[in-house]
Image (cartoon, rainbow, N blue to C red; front, side, top):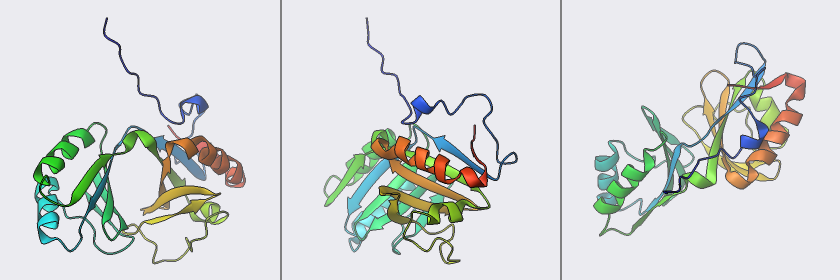
Length: 201
């Protein structure tokens, strides 16, 4: 008999799909997990024209080259993490095919493509007080108008490492390591209570 592997969200024990969950229209501040997305860590030389051209050809999109910016293409997002490092987030199940294609295309280039989706999850916050909430324990100036939807930043939130990306309409995306996911959610729930924090569906 063949063994089957069951995927479990990092936040499965919190039962976020329980009855009584809110939608953005029901509460001031709503949080929901987007589990099982594909996450690819891409390393390579920014100044290597062949590397950049190969990435653009395989992905159909260029990687961001300006620090702390993102490039979005339909349902994929590329995040600048450093001068030679990027994170590509894809729909669930899309990362393996993309990773194989990139490795084949870049086999003679100084590069690395690593699937890291099993070690991370995404939490999306929506509501008018999202930035005020995160500012309680984040050292960045999240209220700055310059930190908009085309930006991203690696930082800490309540001592946990996170990658933040502002969204349209008072939203914020948090990419969190699996081992910190429950802790970050617990902090958001507690610190967001004054804003009417609710779990979304």
